[in-house]
Amino acid sequence: MNLIQLLKKLKKSVNNKNINMKEFKKLLDGMNFTLKSYNKKIFSRFNKETNKFETSPTWIKGYQPKYIFEAEDCMLSLSKDQLGQILVGCFEEKNDWKDTKFYVKTNGKTGLEVRYYINVSKQDDYSQPAPSDNGSQVEDIGF
Image (tube, rainbow, N blue to C red; front, side):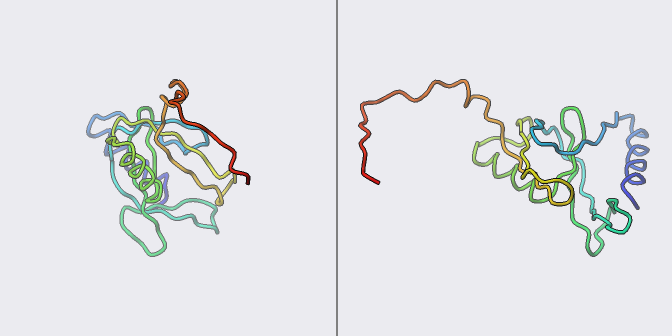
């Protein structure tokens, strides 16, 4: 089953439940998103012969798990590494993953070599004043 077939099947099941289906979006450099809910896990792989992603609702050898999340305005498919980055970021910031704003950075590559890095947005970092001088002295140590 390819991704289009899976999306059509998902849309049918969602429409039968009278739920609005949101559009899937790719992660992009500089993208911001807020996760609302976890949907389900699927398995996918990139088929080099057809140059397309293939998906399955069950594990097949060579397929990797993808976790489907609902964001504010779209659906996102995240890898286990990206999900780990989200969980670590929330743990370090002492946040719940729901309703936490995240931003995406890439390694600058394209195609199959691109890697996406997800971090917790720290909007306050730019609005806080610089730390005040509390009487500490800075001295040159001669390196």
